[in-house]
Amino acid sequence: MAEIRIRNTNERISGEQEVREFLSKQDVLYEHWDPSKLPAHLQEKFALTDEDKSEILSTFDTEIRDLADRRGYKTWDIISLSDATPNLDELLKKFENVHTHTEDEVRAITAGRGIFIIKGNEEIGYFDVELEAGDVISVPEGYAHFFTLMDNRQIVAVRLFIETEGWIAHSYDDPTFVK
Ligand SMILES: [Fe+2]
Image (cartoon, rainbow, N blue to C red; front, top):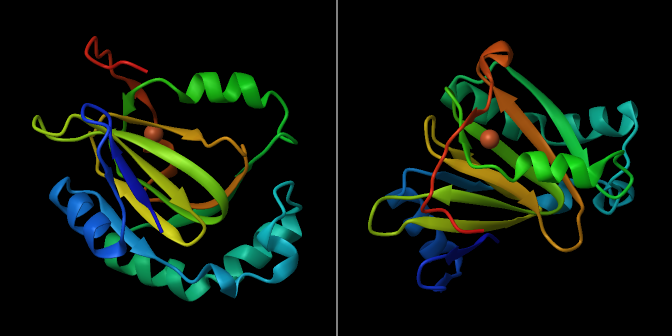
């Protein structure tokens, strides 16, 4: 289950109800899929073949189509990152810049862990959402954010898009943000 850390106060929020309530107040969609549906041989595998990716997508086909129907996503794919990813350090450096998109950024974590750092409302400021397998999150369009891995540096996630061509990161220069 996801956990929140508010950066200004170091306050942590955990527990399904509390996390859901906090994220919904910040306009962040948060849902949960059953990660145990994934076949055991894929639950700890991070260097994926095309066959593995298709198997993950077909395992969660009902959940993906339900989310897509409700929210207008038209395409989806699998992203996996781990120490087996070429240039992982460079990639992470590139990721760790605050940016925005012209559509929402939705990720359903199917294995591993990751963190979205999101700029909330004025009262809250930046907060971290620590995600694990089963967590589904959508950062709203236009919200400043970035994504990074946790210490284990391993994640597999489903990405859903409304329009693949329109999905571009716009850097968001924020002098108030402290890493
Ligand atoms: Fe993004």
